[in-house]
Image 1: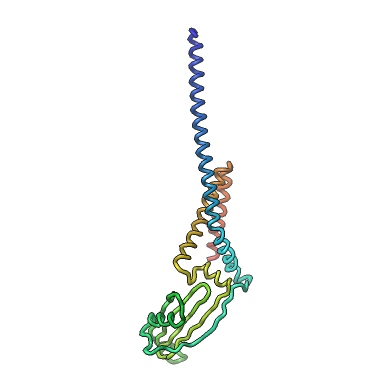
Image 2: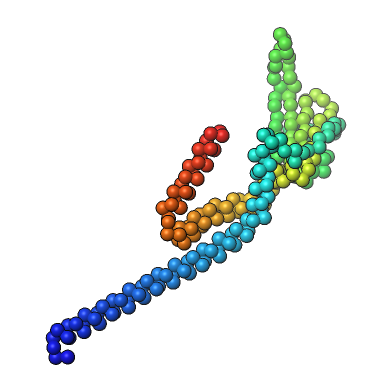
Length: 236
């Protein structure tokens, strides 16, 4: 080992060995971290998908029914309507909100009115004459399964109420659109919408990490997004 060239060669080989070892360890750590991240992302993707599966099925089926209710005229969602007249109490309600409160008790409805309107007296055209139209009060009570629409013209001694009883498909459509539901259902539906967004993002991320042809995937994703925006714009 007294030869300087041999000493230099031994030193270079030792240095290269150390560098190769460090590079190998770094690559191993990166692969290990990437593997752990992918495993965690797959599990999270699966659990979020399981959470939104049941309600996603509900929103998917009712969405199809709503999309094709005009063209295909699917008669799935139906409502049975009945009319009645309720005599006013004495003394009569003082305003539209008081009328809505009385109707809620009289109809034994467990929810407050979703819409209360009060239109003042006004002059309207009647042929070649003008007539005074009395004030008009209205109130709407809604739930996924039943709806009440009440109308009262000031001066009458009764209130006209139209009741609509929804079948199962109409009730599901009401849930889909959020008609007559409480804050709990709205927040639950928001979590489903959030899970769909999360599944879309994690799905693209998983595909890009597991597939080397990332540019093709990015092109497909951007193309589908552009087509969706164009179709939505055309439908408006």
